[in-house]
Every structure is written in structure tokens, then in C-alpha cells.
Amino acid sequence: MSDHKDLSLFIESLTQADEIQQTKQLTAYLNDGMESDTIARLLEALQVEQRVRLWRALPLEFHIAVLTDMRAEARISVIQSLTATELKLILAKLDNLSLLEWEDSLPDEIISEALRLISRDELELYDQANQYDDNQLGHWANRKVFTLPFNIRVSRAKVLLDKYQESSTPYIYLINRDKKFRGLISYADVLTAEPSAPISTLNKTNLTLLRATQPLSEAVSALEHSEYPTLPVLSDHGILIGEIDWQFSLSVQREIYEARLMAGTGIHEGDDLFAPVFKGVQKRGLWLGINLMTAILASITIGLFENVIAQVVALAVLMPIVASMGGIAGSQTLTLMVRAMALNQITAGNRWVFLKNELGIGAFNGIVWALIIGAMAGLWYQSPQLGMTIAFAIVVNIATAALFGVLIPVLLDKFKLDPALAGSVILTTVTDVVGFFAFLGTAGAILL
Image 1 (cartoon, rainbow, N blue to C red):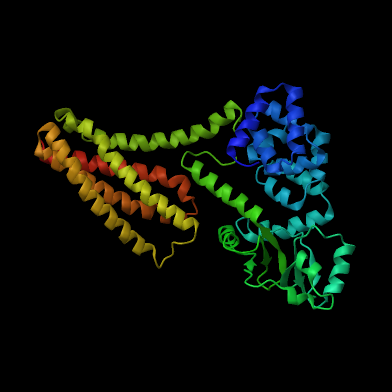
Image 2: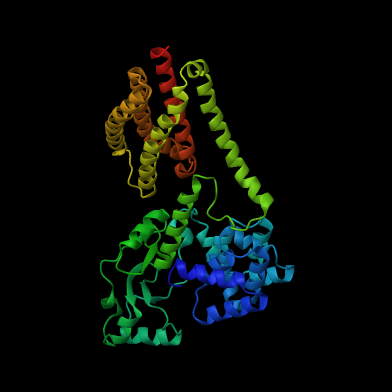
């Protein structure tokens, strides 16, 4: 799959075909080498009935991979459509990483059934992963890596590789008897090396070592700047836990991007494009209710100055300008702050420097745009007092927006809440209330 345009063409072709043609087209896509994640995106773009039917038409070896690559709700829509026998067959084939991916979105009874059915080896790996929190790298590391003793010679390594048929393994990890990490080598280097050479002489240099307790964001950043497509994950005692590769990194980055993109609206990145109407109403209705409460707070503020607005009608025309300028300025600061926090660039040492910088930008922009808007409003309504009123309100609101654009994410983070999810709603409420209060309060003191 080369790009989003190709995906849209495939989706368009599938949606216009009948059932028989859809199955034939999907088979043709698979024969052309389409990957499981692309198949997942295709099926997500279809209504549930079509999605389930085409998933069943996939070769068995694709079933688990495609479900794992689907977003959570789309995956659930397929699983809920399976018969009891089909579900048991699927759960029995799960590996530990797929089960980790599924467990947050499936009912407890299905997860319990999966734990009963999966192989003993996969269950052991699953238990090892759950020794770490789901935001730590050790939870998601691929533990199925090929290892060799670090003190053998190349000739012996070739024998072991041939014996276990690991020619498809691009990288091999070297460990000691205690399973502590001793190096990373490539399969290609083993093939071309002198048979009598120690295997350790093939070690890769400038290799970044990741800790199992590291946050996912740090690991993704490390892999992004690494010259190798895979990196080892170690315990605090240097024992090799597993690895992460660039595909994992891309997957995490995509999920982070989607979460940030959708968070401000209360929609989760795992939501299904064709979710049932009632389920969609439930999830979105809650967010609409939250926004209604914030809107009522802004309306109450306006209501406090109802007599001022009644006497100076121009205020009602100009109020949206004050709120909008504060909202845009605040969202700029908030976006920078949330991004910096996600990348671990904001610390106690530089947080207040950033706040001071944003306040400076807010004050300067506030004064410049206050003069422009104040002059325009004064000339429009032939009232210098009205121009000064809106100018003062804009300076106050933009400075307030800069202040709270920094403070709100800090406070939400301390309460273990996602700043990207709730930050924009709270900030909009603050800028609306402060803007209206400054504008209408000043107008009441000056114009009446």
C-alpha cells in the first residue's frame, strides 16, 4: 500500500462491488502482497456485516493479525459476530502480544477464556509482560528474539542458525549464561565473517540500549534517531527482555497522533467508523453535556451584564471578537505545551521560563491587536470609549489565555488527566468567561 490515495481507491472499489466480487477483490489484494494493517483499514471502512463476512473470507493465517491491527471497536464488532466455536478457535491461536493489544477492549469473560486456551509458552510471555505497566516499554517488547552465546565463534553460530532455520532473522542478540545482553549482530555479517572469528567481533556499535521501565514515548524517540531498525530492551539488571522495531514505533506514533487529533472532541482513537447509532449517541452525548455546562457558565457571565448590553447594543456585536481572540491565542499556547509534555521536554526547571516567554508573547500580541481592533471598533461606532473598552478586554484575555494555556496542562497532568483531552474545553471556558467579564465589566464602568 503506497499511500492514502491508493487505500481510498481500494475502498471505493470494494464498496461498489457485490458480495462475490468483494471476496475476489480482497483475494487479489492479498496475492499482490497487501499487509495485514492495510487489510484492517479496508475492513474498518465497511459496514459491520460486510466487514465480518470479508474477514471470514481471509486465509486463516491473516485472521489474528488483521484483528490486532484493527481499531478496538472495529475488532469488537467482528469478535461479537463470531459463533462460540469460531471464538474459541481464534482465542486459542492468540500470541502474547495480540492478547496484550486486545485485553483493554474485550469483556473480562473473553479475556479469561483466552488465558485458558492459549499455549503455555504464550501465557508465560503474557505474564512477563504484565509485570510492567502498559505505558512502559517492557509491557510491549517482543520477547521472541533469537539469541546466541556471546563467547562462541562464527562457525558455531552458523551451525546453530542452520539448525534452527533462523535465516529470516535480520538481527541476533548475544547474551551470557545469565541472559544478560552482550551485543547485537546481523545475520548477513555472520554469513560473511571468518569462521574462526569470535562472534562478539561482529557487535554493532553506537547501539542505543532501552530499559524496560522507560515510557513508550522515550523508546519511540530513541528508535527514531537510531541507525538500526530494531533495538534491545533490557531489565534494570541488564537482562535481555526483548526488542522493539520500527513497525512498533510507527504504530505507537500513529496511535498518539490519532489520540491527540480526536481527544478534544471526546472521541477515542479506537472508535468504529460504523458504530451502532445508540452506542455513538451514548459516547458523544456525554461530551456534548460537558460542553453545555461550560457554555452555561459563559452565558451566566453574559447575563450578569444584561442591562449593559441592552443599553449599548454594539457590545453584543463585538463580544465574539473578544472571545475568539482569546480562544485562538490560548489554543496556540496549549498546543505547544501539550506537545512538549508528550515529548518530555517540559520539566520543573524550564516550566516557568516557558510561562514567562508565553506571557511575553501574549502581552505583545495583545497590545498590537488591541490597538488595531480598538481603532476599528472606535471608528465603526464613532465611540473612542468603546474602542478603548474592547482594546483593554483583548489585552486581558490574550494574556490570560497564555497564562492558562501553560497552567491547565500542568494541573491536569498532576491529577493524572490527559491535557489533550480536557485542556481545550477548560481553556475555552476560561477565555470566554474572562473575556466577557473584562469586556462587559469595563463597558459598564465606562459607557454607562
